[in-house]
Length: 185
Image (cartoon, rainbow, N blue to C red; front, side, top):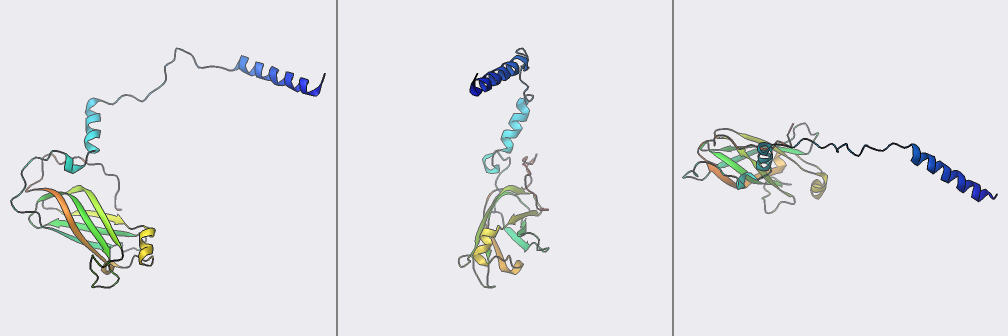
């Protein structure tokens, strides 16, 4: 008998033993799935996935437009490349969804149009009536490379609220639910 035939017989015998003794899953056992969610839970998830501006908002727009102001500061610890910002409204309105333009100022008199680094930021959140909205934005290394890689100080940055979506004279009841995914800790 040749060596090749002997090896072939051993391999076939090994496969035969393997297939004879292996266990298979019972045919009558159903696969395990996660429990179904209720229609109520599914509706809540769909609401959370919808932008605020596309949801119904009770109340009427105020007669005067919102008068928003923004304050900002570069992360004082210097550990992260973050700008913390604080938005207020002069009339005490509820206001939602903001477009904010942050820009780097190499010199104190640099304007938005002259800035070498513009960082637009969309906020799908709301400012409660008579409150201050607190948020942050991270500036990534690729952006900072355009200005020498250094975040600078608060004086090196400017910010403007370009636009907002809707305002109400008081908070809607209930407040719109939101996913809180990112925090500025």
